[in-house]
Picture (cartoon, helix red, strand yellow):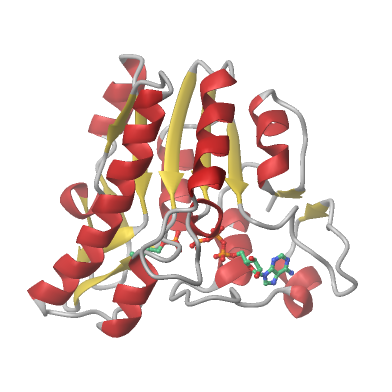
Length: 245
Ligand SMILES: Nc1ncnc2c1ncn2[C@@H]1O[C@H](COP(=O)(O)OP(=O)(O)OP(=O)(O)O)[C@@H](O)[C@H]1O
Ligand SMILES: C=C(C)CCOP(=O)(O)O
């Protein structure tokens, strides 16, 4: 059973304060993962208050690239430091976590099609490790380097690893409808477009709308849920909103 799980940047960081880990939230998520019984787990984390501020400062988005090596490095370096923090805490809790940095193993072509080699991730999984990827900057033909969101990486991993379950743990309990109630299932973007907004904090990758779009293209059901439902998700229960295109 292969599970791909994203810890939202808005969960593990304080999104209002630049480069600040939310210690309690990260420790809770790490403790829940350490207690879970999942044979093959690939983790991804988002940027929260790390990558998004640097991306905005240097004008880099998923579609606007940059050839400024120092700017690209500043974005990547902030994500690498957040990744160090996540991997370190997982290891301290007994989870055999190892980092995988998308900048070093992926690229986009001029049409923005992503290639991200999964050899390292798949081999780590087969050897009993827990690979930890993250939203990043990535070289793109004709554009320098552009942003790749953690959600896009989740979609790529889910397909490439033939994942059995996919989960996005965000700050919200699921995707809300116009009345603020959690929508149990989404099968068409048009049905929910009006209720889907951007993230409340600095976020160059588009908040919930982009998340739902990426998940609808997966071809496998994926769940969006809040931190309180993480243990339930890892135990195999249906939680939050199921997005199934
Ligand atoms: N209809 C909706 N239902 C739920 N959340 C919504 C909706 N519309 C907008 N949002 C916003 O989307 C946010 C979740 O997207 P966001 O990209 O911030 O999550 P994340 O993946 O946890 O963080 P990051 O992108 O930093 O990794 C919520 O915190 C909320 O502010
Ligand atoms: C801004 C960067 C570097 C990555 C964004 O990833 P996300 O937080 O998953 O949207």
